[in-house]
Amino acid sequence: MGGDLRKLHHDAGSDTDKVSELLQSVKGVGPAGAAIFLREAQTVWSDLRPFADDLTLKGAKQLGLGMSPEKLAGQVSANNFPRLVAECVRAALDQQVRAEMVEALG
Picture (tube, rainbow, N blue to C red):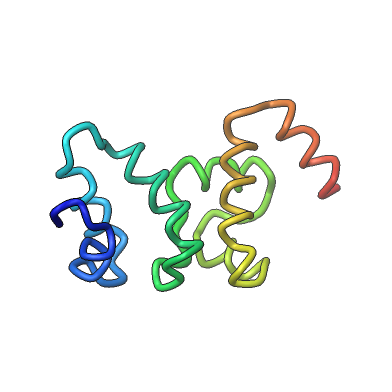
């Protein structure tokens, strides 16, 4: 990889598991860091969509939005999917945010 994320993307192709594995080969990057990277990278690297890690799916479940990346992706446009993922993570991490979202989805 040599510090070039474009090379990592090229080497891994559209395989999010491979991207995660390559990222975790970098000292200091663990599963959580790789998941955060993938959630954000799919904004730019659309071939990684739909990516949703366990934290995203936890939030989606709490919001009643579905339990798979494909089901989540079917609820918004492709360009809005990364935003939906971010909001699901926020819902998973913050009870008040979750309550506000549930009310808004109501």
